[in-house]
Image (cartoon, rainbow, N blue to C red; front, side, top):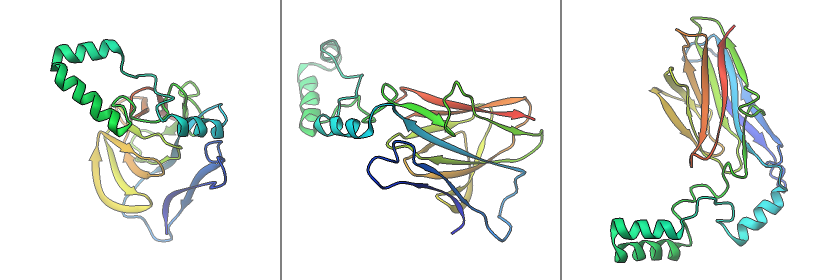
Length: 215
């Protein structure tokens, strides 16, 4: 198969420790869309903690890394807003599921640092382009457990492939990319010298960003 893929270790916790990378298979025949420049944008989550220890504490308590747990103050506010019975029933429902509505991701930016092509937002990964070019961005989510919402403010993105397969082109302002997914998009930067590629975790606790800039 041709397209955008990635490789990673299935041994122990090596993937979380950084043993992964993009795998691009170029076609022999021309592709059904035009582009002038091609970049891989690999999104990942990183922790300096021992991944085995992180996994162990999650098995003991799935909300261990949830720093947004509901408090007694939240309970009082819910009673005032919903009434005592509805609030107690809501807490009972979540308790029976052994879940919490504020724990969208088992681990978020309170523990993880998010990376784009191996660098943080401060590192500012940059892809260069010339004015008028069509740029293909191959987004890969190589995270251990983070879902990202991706957007490029000021630019429309046309999705042309998903998980290595061509798709009917769809133009979007933003898309959500799950763990292990890949999306190929075409953008046509114009009107300004730089655009921010912004990827935010699903729980809105952190982000990573990079730049498309005029060469």
